[in-house]
Structure formats: C-alpha cells, structure tokens
Length: 263
Length: 263
Figure 1 (cartoon, rainbow over the protein chains, first blue to last red):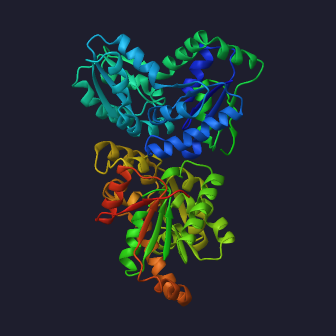
Figure 2: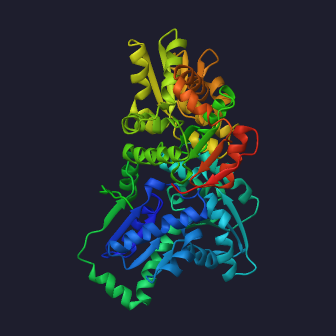
C-alpha cells in the first residue's frame, strides 16, 4: 500500500492526484483531524504527531510513506527519515524541483502556513538547486480555514487572498509555489490575483508524479506495492465530522468512507 | 486553586476576568493548544480531551474546575459532572442567565463555533428559563482564526462579521450572546454591525461573576481555595508558539509565562 498522511483532509488532494497518476496502486490514507491544523503548532508537537501517523500507516501495511502535509514535511521529514527504514517522500521536494525548472527570472514566490514559512525550507531547497535564485515567502494562515469552511469563491476570500499576495506582487516573481495542500482548491482565486503570467505550482500534482518516478526507479518497492494491488484503498481519520466527510467527497468527486481510529 | 481549561488561549479572557473579579485567588490554567481548535471536532473527541484536561488540573491542586471553552462546555460538561466529584462550572450557564435577565423582546441571538451551535445548548438553557423566548443561533467558524491571527480591526474581519451577523439582524433580536471566549476580542467590530441597541453578553465576564457567586454560596470550597492564596497563578499549555505567547500577554496586559506540558 502507498501510505499517505496529512494533518487533515487537505492531503486528500495529494491522494487523489496519486490515484490518478499511479492507477491500480491502493492507498492507505490517514488524516489527523483530531489534531488539525498542524500549521500553527510547534515543531516538537508536529514531529510527535508525524511519528504516530507513520507508525499507524506501517501497521496498515504501507511500504512507502508520503507526507502530504507541508507543515509536517517541513518540520518532521528529516526526523522521520532517520527513524524509519521505509522510504519517506515529502510533499516539498517535488514542488521545489518544479519551481527550479520553470522559473526564468529566478524570482520565486512561496505561500504556506506559518509553520511552513517559518521553517524556511522552500528557500533552502530551491537555493540548493539554483543558488542565486530569490525566494519570497508569505504565510497565509487564514486560507486553510477558508477552504475548510468551503468559502471557495466568496468576496471575503478574494480580499484576504489579495491582501496576502500583495507583497509578492511587488517582487515580480514569475513562479508561485502553492506550499499547502489546501491551496489548490483556491487556485482559481489565486491565479487572477497574483497575475496570469505567474506560473502556479500545485504541490499535489508534483507529489504524485514524484511517487510515480520513485516507483520506476525502485523496483523492489514497486514490486512490494504491486503485491497489494488486490486491496482496496482505505481512508482513516482520527476524528470525523460532517464538514470533513463533505470535503473528502468533494475532493474525490465520489463518496469516500472515512473510518475513525484512535492513533 | 481555581482550575480553568480551554482549547487554547481564548479562555484566557475568562481567566483574566476571574483574576479581576476574584482577586487573591490563584488560578491554574490549562490551554490545550496541541489540540486546538475544539469547535470543529466531534463530541467524542472533545469529551476525551476535556477529561484529560480536568485530570491535569486536579493533579495541579484545583478544587474547582471552570470550563472556559464554549465547545467543551456544550458537549462535555454533563459528562464531566457525572465523572468527577469536584464542582464544575461551565461558561455557558452564566451567559444564558444574563441573557434571560436582559432581554425584553425575548428574541435572543447567539453566535459561536460550529460545535457550540450544533449542540443547541444555548437555546435549551435559555428556554428553560424563558420558555417562550425565541433563540436565533449563528455559527461563525472563521472568527476564532481571525482572532488568533490578530486581525482585530481589518476590513476583511469587518466584512466576515457583517456576513455572519446578517441573518441575525433580520430577526430583530435585542440581546446577543458572544458564545465563544475569543469573541470579546472582536466586540468593537460586532457591536456596530449588529446594531447599537442590541446588548452584547460577554461570557467571560459572566463566568467570572458566577465563580465569585459560587464561592460565596459554598463556604467549604471557598475555604479550600483560600488555603491556596499563598500560591502564584500558573499557566500551562500543551503546545506553545510565539503567536500563542503574544496573545496571552495581550489578553492579560502583562507578560505571561506559559509552561509547556504533555497531558
């Protein structure tokens, strides 16, 4: 099974993209709703939750772990890699590679939660690839709440996005990384407000392509994942409410059964 | 010690009000930041967290428990009362009594988180006092995030509040209960938007008055609380970030040391 965890339902945009790009490989998803959101919490706490989530996915038979949460990827991925022997793919690396490939002006914007922006991980990773690139980051903490409330086209959402993006507009970026898995759901509002010439990078899609590439390059893992082909994808959450179930079904475009477990 | 718990820092408005109205009685506060917010979580999960919080406060020497969180009060207070022998005061009861006393038209509005509004507790409690009163509730899920981001006078905050209050304006209420401990911090925006003739009930202040009354009526508890007078108030959190510390100091108007503990 491909194991995927997120602080909530945002990571389902990653799960959905993996399902499309790697069809036939069953997923086991864990959304840590009981502790959501991670983005406003401390690194210690995020690391502790991320280990619990990984333990759970391994118990469920995952042979590959995808960290679908930017906040967890930025603060916990090194720790997880040193602690577990299973391959761990974080949602940040593929987006940074894509940004480095796409930019021409070498001026790149990144939006994310406070935890992600404070970790400064996008700047570090992109500058490892293009040392003289300029990275401009902006924390957009309210956007997760707007998505979770389903305010996907309200005037208030547009205004809040305009306010957050304003400093980035002044930096003349040519590429903007959507550094949070909730943000693709607001892409139609972000695009016009950052300017149509700025290329948007959807970390969910990049992550799914990276999983596909990883399987091609690691025959043993692919073989192990192929052995689980007969199984159905399973979706677990540490808490469940109607809003969460609606969001899951909205992302997948079909009813998704969420099983509540204690981790 | 007077034990107080909340899902986060919002309950500090209650702690601050108790400190003012019951001076000389030390507090032990627990803010469950690692699990914040409660308002979007399920009743089972909120009950589980509330029990953990109560256990912690009792270990710290609390002889009275104040549930400073509306979401926990609405979903977990009955459960806690049947489980513990120590007196448990919830933040909802005092505000409902005040609303019943103040209203003349018997048309009362209540705003709160989704969990609080779905529990329908304000309506039930107020109608126990005034059976023919009309209670109009409105969930305002984004307001907690706005407060936690410090957006206390932004144009977007005003618009969001106006949108949330619009249905209540049509109901010609004369009293509005701020059914979430974060909301007093937005009172200056809520007042003009609901109309100056509508009386706002600040559940933090009502809670503090209720604690004072409770002590007057329960000599044994007051005596036990008096024995702790030599101690300093202590503030614990299950997670800590800069934003949380800033908010705590803002509410108290002085630096507040938050001790991080695992509960």
